[in-house]
Structures are given as structure tokens and as C-alpha cells.
Amino acid sequence: MKHVIVALGLIFIGQSLPAEEVKDFGRDRLNSSPRHADWVDIKSGDRTIKAFVVYPESKNKTPAVLVVSEIFGLTDWVRSLCDELAENGVIAIAPDLHSGQKLEDLDAARKATSALPKEQVKADLNATADYALKIPACNGTLAVCGFCWGGGWTFDYAHTNPKLKAAYSFYGVAVDNLADAKKEAAGKKYEPVIYKGAGHGFMRSGEPTNPAVREGDKKARDEAWARWKTLLKQL
Image (cartoon, rainbow, N blue to C red; front, side, top):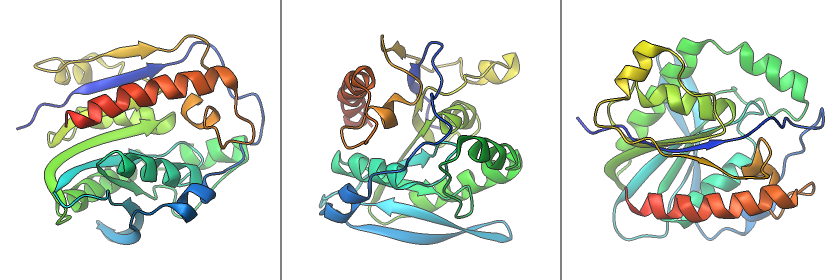
């Protein structure tokens, strides 16, 4: 059994999204990427879900990273982040946990996401993880990352799937149940990082191509990516 390492917990302090709408972006990066990407169908129980996969430009087998979206669904931004992960040498696979919904209205996104059954989300993550490990280009190493709602799921999923080698939670709600926390305690390393001046969602709002980019968030995003790239090389 491989150890689950919650390797990166990126935490925010007291700042929430300022607007009721969060505009999507990232299509330009996807359209200009030299990397191969696919939409795939994955069986999850009696359902079939979609997932977006991006492959690195590598002749060798590589780790796979499961990407769990924010409350806005599998947006262009999430898919562009998958491309950025693949640029850094891993297979990135993001399941469409929202069944095709891409939401920009904050209230609608909250309602749609809170309506998702937890057991369904967990089943879809398990199905995607199993699919990822069977990709011929995968070397058998699996990690997970997530953002906001997906960051919370990253913490939760880290103690339920023993196949994970690492988990990278970006501003997600940490595990607060003692019994679950004990599952992460033995042989695991947890390294939280706080970026001063960063707001919630800084990986998205700090993107240089974001029309509403915030300078403090851009600095935090750059620092987080520099750290993350180092950790990805350790998979």
C-alpha cells in the first residue's frame, strides 16, 4: 500500500469571492497547446461520466494526477490547468462531476454543487482514479489535486483511496473529523503553506490571462506553481 501524502495545503484568510459572477477563461491556452487531449467516457456504477485528459509530451510513462474542480464545474479554466499540469510532465485527468454544467453565477454554482450526492462524487472519483491507472502511458503512480470545493474533496479523498501517493489541496476545507484525521496520521507528511496577501481562489484569479486578474493573487499563484512543480517531480 502506498502512503497517502497530503503534500500541499494552500490556505486563505478571510477573503471571499467579491462578485456574484465568476467569468470563465482558458480557452486560448487549450486551443494553442501542442499537447494531446481527449474527452473520455468512464463507467461509474450504472452511470457513464465524461472526463478530460491531457497527456505530457514524453516518451516515458508518467504519473497521473486526478483534478477535482471548483463549484463551477469542469470549466475551460480547469481544463487549461490540466494542460499546465501536463506541460509539467504528468497525465492530468479531470472528471466532469457536474454532468456537463459549467456555471458562472456564484449562487447557482453553490446550489448545483451542494445538490451533488457525496456517494456519487466519491464513486465518480474512484472510477476516474481506476481509469487513470489503466492508461497505458501511466507508470502506476497516482495523485490528486483540487480547488475550493475540489480542495475539500482532495483532503477527504486522501484518506479513502490507498492508491494515492500525494494529494495537493488548494484552499480546501481540511478534514475536521478525528476518526478521519487519524487515517492520515501514520506515515503521512502534511505541509501547509499560507501565501500572504492572497485571496480565496488565487490559482484562478491570479492567472495572467484572467480578465479580472488580481496582482496579489498572481504573486501567490506564481509562488504556488513554483512549489508545485518541484513536488510533481518527486512523484
